[in-house]
Image (cartoon, rainbow, N blue to C red; front, side, top):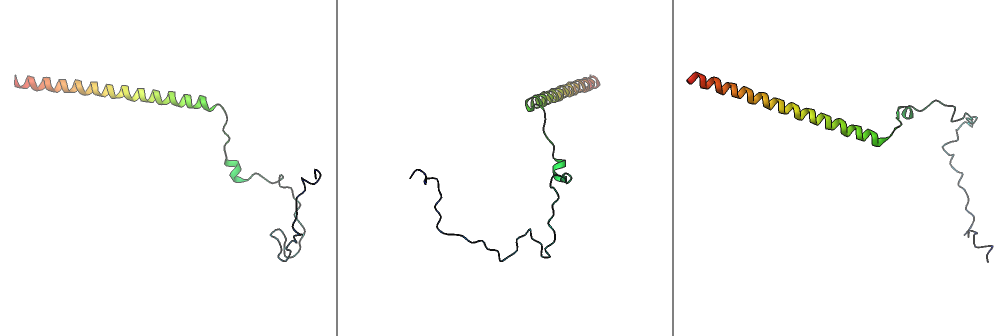
Length: 101
């Protein structure tokens, strides 16, 4: 019993259908192409594919730093614009007061 436990049980012999030619066969019976697949040039899709190299954590850290800098610069620009706006408003109010005095 121990010798037969790994054998597969077969119900009957299965015959292969050879009535239709397969996709690889040519109708004229020409010689088979024996060129190696590796000898061909690179596929255009594979050549355009980029390989990611480097440390992804370092890149994300740099991206976060750059975004933080941009945010700080934009915030400082907004503050500078508000200061200029307030200064111009003060000048307008003072000049208007001077006209009516």
